[in-house]
Amino acid sequence: MSKTTKKHNGRAFKVADLFIREKDATKGLLTVEWVAMGYLLLTVVMMAFLWDKLPNTGEMIRGRLQFLVVTLAVWGVYILWPCRLTMFGRILVQMLFLGWWYPDTYELNRALPNLDHVFASCEQWLFGCQPALVFSQRVPYGWFSELMCLGYVSYFPLMLLVYLYYFFRRYDEFQQTAFVILTTFFAYYVVFVLLPVTGPQFYYLAAGTEQIADGVFPSLGDWFLTHSERMAAPGWADGFWYHMLDLTHDAGERPTAAFPSSHVGVTTVVLLLALRTRCRPLYLTVLVFYLLMCLSTVYILAHYAIDAMAGLVTGVVLYYCLLFVYGRFIGK
Image (cartoon, rainbow, N blue to C red; front, side, top):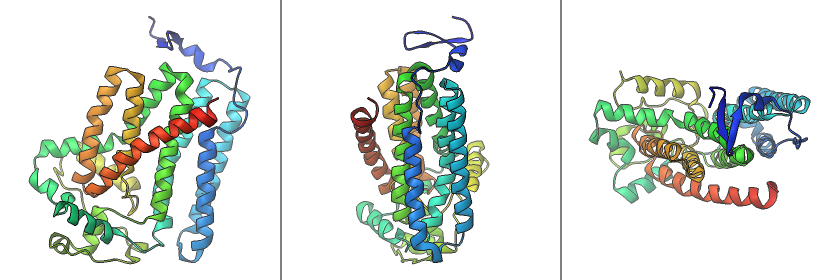
């Protein structure tokens, strides 16, 4: 097989196939684009109700207008030349915008009373301690810290890996894969804007780690309306992957989106999609990083243990529900 070909649905896939005009091209917006539009509309309605409490409404509106312009632009490019490459571009744009939609959830939910004290109390009741507080203390080794940080920052690369596999090897299922993953994200984002839970790295710092260790979990009210300071992640501060984690946190982390853990939930969906391919190397690769992800969310103080557990359960539920919805109503 030449360097320019790959096996695709049982035949040789050539790079030139990326540019061949599709005969059955989708004329309107893709389902994933409509899902994103629906989420945009929902958040605009929420903005209208919370307008007086939101400090960055101008920036939020500009971001939504930019999203509309870019989405319509790549749609126009696809209409002009409908092919696999321009289809991939449309999906990629929606994937890249997830990095903007995530911190935007904080802009909305910080206007609501914080609920971390409820979740920290549940954690204490279930485990008799705060696993996020004691995990790194019990396993303080530098090599383990690096594995945890590597697992956490593998989030988007794992998604891209599965996207690319479906694009090159199972193109007929590519749009379905994009729908399942991206709709999973937006389902979590809806929960995040309505359920203001920041997670240990923000709540422990604001409440005081001594109080937390003593089992005291104060209600912070609207503290995070004006505060976004977070604790440094535990572990080997000189490690390469620790620095990569710091960079990702500095770029987009906000006191938001703790319950359920979308990192665990989305990666659960990605793992099930990888299993569906029956490609053993792909599935085993995703499985290794999935296990690291489940542990790392608690280790680095991003989530309570119950967040990770809820992420696993909701990830499985969303995967099967969205596959059913696509097969029954969309992918005919």
